[in-house]
Structure formats: structure tokens, C-alpha cells
Length: 201
Image 1: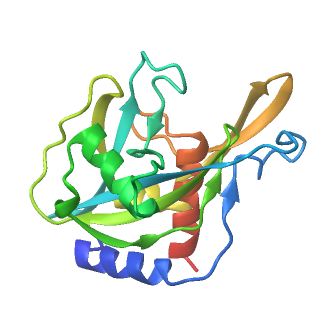
Image 2: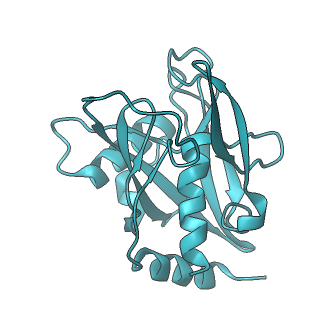
């Protein structure tokens, strides 16, 4: 079994590789984005915690009361505010607000290429290591739960699969990487697959 330092070294190497971004439309070429739409920048944090058995990734389950994507599994994050100095600042601010993770408790490793969502966002994943002991405190208006998933689960390509459902009268295909009771799918799974692909390059 790989150790956390080995996994951290692999993450650093993966982040140094060139590569293209991804999109919710990658697997569904027949589903076209609206012409002339304006994409809004957003940042999400992939926070990895070091344990004795390796790294674990913190994910959230969005509040079931939210208007958009209720109950879905997501990274802590959101749209960029005018006061954010850059997209990394956005990701760190949102993680602080949503799960109580102080920016000072995160060593930023780097960014993955941006992912375009069907909802009109350009989402940049920011990878970070949680440097001190951390217990999530969720923002109840936005997050129902924060939980951890083993690094090896979300970076093994064999754990990913494509599934589909009808959306606005068309079949839409998307990535999935379920873990226990958590159905990780859509943009979150697509960004994780992008990371997994880099780790085997």
C-alpha cells in the first residue's frame, strides 16, 4: 500500500503535466451549450488529509434545501467574488465558509485545468494538503455533510464508469465514481477522473 508521502509526490508530479481542460459536454457531444453564453469563473478545493494509511479526500454533500444541485456530492467551492485575488483564493475562501477549513491550514499544491459545466461555470480545481488536525464544521445552509474518501479510490481509473440519463429531452452521459453510500458523479467525478488520468501518465 502506498504511503501518504508517496501519494503526495505523485500529486506534485501530476500537477506538473500539461493538459487540456474538461467539460460536462465531453461525453455528450449531441448536447450543445447555449450560443453566446457567458461562463462565470469558479474555484473548488480538493483538500487531502494525511493519515497513517494514506491520503483521504474531503468531499461534501450539498444541502438538500439548495435550489441548484441539492444533495449532490461536491468539492467545497463556489463562484469567484470580486474581492478574491485569484481563483485559489476563491477555493480557499469557499472551503472556509462551507466546511470551516482555515486557509492557513492548507498547503496549496497547484491547480488542474478548468472544467466547464453545463450550468455555465468554468471551474478550476485547486489541490491542497491539510497541514494540521482538522474536524469539518459544515455551513448548514449549504452543506448537509462532509466526509472522506480514500485517495486510492478516487485515483483508480477502474473505479470510474460512465452512466446516462435523459436531460431536457436528450440523453446525457456523465462520469461516476461511487463510494459506499455516496454517489459521486457529474462534474465532481469528471474532475477526479482528470486527476486519475494524470496519475497514470
